[in-house]
Length: 264
Image (tube, rainbow, N blue to C red; front, top):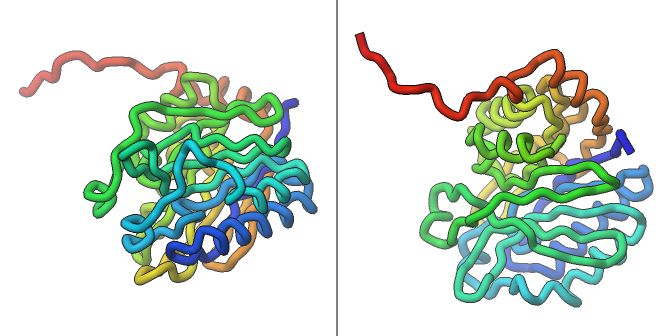
């Protein structure tokens, strides 16, 4: 397959109410399925809520991705792979993670955020590896919010074979300018699609600004939301990636080092 219909979804999340948030995720996944979407990306910490009170409270355990995800499994059975952000426990460590729920009911948590920002540094342990998933034969790199501010993070996924970069994110008011620059830049630098899902509405004491979008390999938004609940739907085409990378060869021309710096 060279084409994949994807959606960046956004909605408000309730602090600490996993059951309600899983139900919202399931509702968005069911809606995506009715439109032929094969991959849905949901925001950072969507299933637990992005809020300090939720982060400091009981968290789902990475070794128990069982019955609490069943509503999302049922919705995914409509043919949609769902990538959703959540806080998780891994042993004694707390992580900001992405869970992946497949149409066959399989659920995994393959990725933990590698770049922690602000108060996250006091609450969580950073992940120690990158991760990609394959949907309908198309490889896609995983990322969570601040990861996408580091060019080398998306580049690592692209150099390993990813043609898309999936970002579960949560941006606060005042962050729209940087948000819209970072993820378009990751797309054009690597000749890859970027699926950016941003949390919206109020969660606990904080407001979030949404802005979910799908960017093409030239960094142009193919679909974009404001702060409303909904889906930004667009198509990934691997032939477009190949053509873009053949014309704009930054990924192939990357140098591992630039030598010592001369100061005159």
